[in-house]
Length: 189
Image (cartoon, rainbow, N blue to C red; front, top):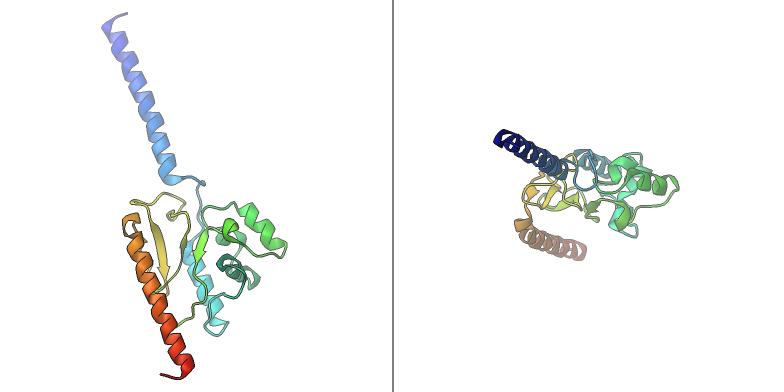
């Protein structure tokens, strides 16, 4: 075996491993781990807004779980199974549940939805995010975390390193909201 044959074979092996590694990395970024998905978070935000417009300013609420309350968008004709599945639940699973007149639960909805909010609440309060922390087409987000939709329509990417701070801020905003509601109910304002 000549040195040229060895070099050619070595180059072939290196290129083959490079292609395999490149494909694996691409698959991990673009289709991780649930496959390509375009469950548009912007469409969900507009469906929620339309629901509130026709329900006295209240976003879906009152069911057994936040995911079940989010199912009210389907009953109102504002969202389909593909949208409500989020980016991590098979559409067929959600379609079967909704067409049988049932409501979604934590295991059958890929969105983390914050129920009990109203239009006019503090715009810095988050209303939903993708549970799995995936991007626009089901891809992994750089630095982990989630894309969060706020009541004021902002939708930043909160990296994993900032997630605990985000949750603490949200808790504080909800505590302030609760205190304001109590004062309003007591006639203090």
